[in-house]
Image 1: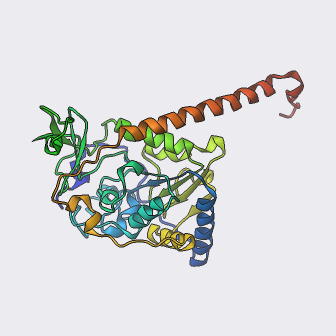
Image 2: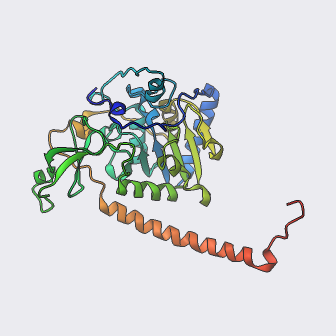
Image 3: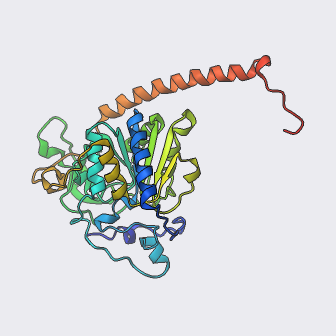
Length: 337
């Protein structure tokens, strides 16, 4: 591999619960649950997807906490077998399905914990994606904070400087950066999450009426808690994962099956065609320099929407509080309560 990401991380003891046994719903149950999930998506106005390592296992990239995960095997003194390098890995059927669901308006946003760059390679538009833990195919300028696509996976972890000058100068416009140097965007354990991506992830997760998790045990925070942000306002949570998670009881629906199978069935129900991966839409395969900076205008637009949402919920809460404090509405506790 061009970089063994796990070995590049700093020493860290608390890697979560490892090697939990996987559960598999029967074929009939999966079929019924996927029908229910498709209906939930159709009925929802703001659908947000949360993706973890389980989304990329069918691309030949192992997960971390599964029975044969990187850290599960590490604890046994073993190493996983990689079927492909990060450079050669291609987006899975699930990555392509998600891009298509976004383009058809069924999904409004995707929040990823993955650093493998497969959402990028699928052709997904940056404005629909938050990358909370970085991306092996993205460099960022330490001065102007703009991001640029790499053709090969970076060989460092922890936002290390590469010594390469900022690529904004290649665009020949007024936004050129003087003196900026690029660094990798892949986070180490103690690194802060990227501010813009985290803000977008938080606001979308809260505004969502349906949060769907795909291939994650939800153990890493704050990423693992974001899918719960809509529950207080009546939003719904769907968990798709082979291993049980600590939030399963909070979910409207839990599907224990391979993500590729789930999304294939859901897309078929919604009448959505899943495109094949093509180098034509893969920015890492282009000869010219591509920018990957999250547009500030998208952050501002969502922030405005989120503030309106906060005002609305504050008014509702104020009215509810007044209702509770009105003498005639106070419930008299019974002795047994």
